[in-house]
Image 1 (cartoon, helix red, strand yellow):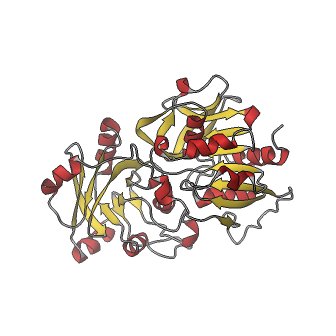
Image 2 (cartoon, helix red, strand yellow):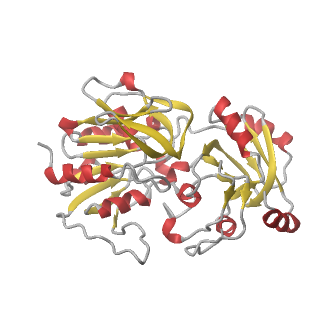
Image 3 (cartoon, rainbow, N blue to C red):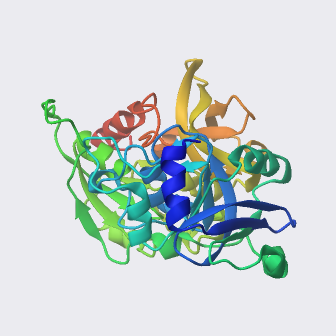
Length: 387
């Protein structure tokens, strides 16, 4: 760690922090941000960049986010890179929290950004040790203590901490009222935004915790985007001249999302459907499959996925704790993508119903753009309609 960044903060506010896991393991570091005790499921993300996108991604609701990259905060934060209108991660743990931003796009330093939003931060932690423990023990829940409380006194509370199992967190993060989205992705002022000369198509995005980057990619592909809350009725989609439906990403246990399967079932065979992350899992459940919790989830921007139809390998962005169990899927459902690390299902399709679902994030943010073609394929299905 660089003394130039660490010493001023320690001299100004020498606050200790502790991460206490439900299995009794304790990690120590320093505190910034809110003075509090935060409960959540501890997960780690291996991406080198994109901390603002992660923090504001609603899929991190209920989780304490640990970043494996060494230095966090160097590019600051800005309004355009936010994936929602707030920070959803319960807390942030890093090895080093940089106090100065060096990007020309930065509007606010990361520490100031988190302080303004009353988010607890643990820094100076041995994040390598945390990751090794989570890989062995699983995505364990626990407490991040930044208010000076003694960790030994909160062991009992940590032992009763709950993870995301059985929680319908989508209802907590999704919109309450429908709205239109018209913004495309950010581009450098030196780049002329290409025009899409394809005819416009209308898409309903069911918000289970949608990232703005998904909405931006849909705009690029020529969609008129309408975002609907998760308690919408099938009639809200079928009676409003939509050409397709996107089931968005989101947090929590897919099996616990109230009413989702009944809603999706009423749309099957009526419109083309694209499911992303949680939306992929909800489609899997609706089609008769089961979901299982992964030992420590997939969180990062370098996950290799094989596209079975071409044998190509995509490097993908991922953020999920659950997976559709392949053996549980009906025979008519085709698996399209497989994770090369643990061979879990990363994509499925049912062509006669116009369905494609992807477990990874084709919009990336953060991550590679290998899978952006999914949005173009969806646009083609929407323009062609169900045959």
